Image 1: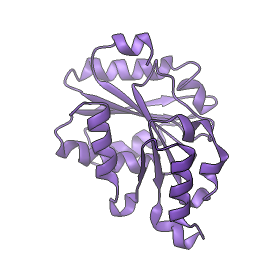
Image 2: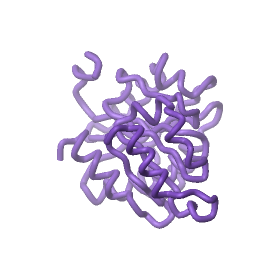
Image 3: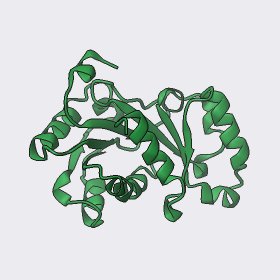
Image 4: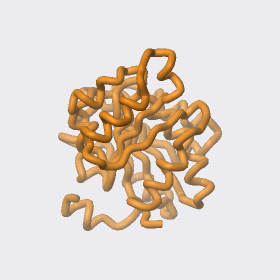
Amino acid sequence: MSAETQARVGAARVGIGGPVGSGKTALIERLIPAFAARNVSLAIVTNDLVTAEDAERIRRSGLIDPTRVAAVEAGACPHTVIREDPTLNIAAADELEMRFPDVELILIESGGDNLASTFSLDLVDWWMFVIDVAGGDDIPRKNGPGVLKCDLLVINKTDLAPHVGVDLVRMEAEAAATRRGRPMALTNCRKVEGIDAVADRIMADVLFR
């Protein structure tokens, strides 16, 4: 953890990265009521290249006060604004904290990126990486930095495994071996499966509750 992160007082910041279509926004939509049930005051920052599409989707969902959702337009490679120069995201999170002094947790969703995407610890305290079974069961074997370095690996869309010829048991085992036992979670956002495990991990590891 960086000196800046250690010194910061205020809301915890959790990054959510992963390839395009892996289900990052859907995961956030499921986490919102999970954190509400745990009495966590939440805010969200989304990243897109040149739109606010993901932010608008969450605002329209009715799951959270729309003013608690900020949008960052990266305008370049998505990982630039979460790793090399995260100042836009830091400013968006700081603004949310100023507007909502009660906020305890800010979820920062990266724009869809590749397996090399990682978060700067000047931006987040902890981060997860979302992959999905439809992307192929070989993803864990590719040793991408996102898969290897994240605090929590989320294997999403488990319901699709039989439809895309993926051996989910093998994929989970290979991911566990690649990560050498570091935390993982399997989720199916459509059926709200595995969401509590993700929320509880954040509660324990980030909010210490």
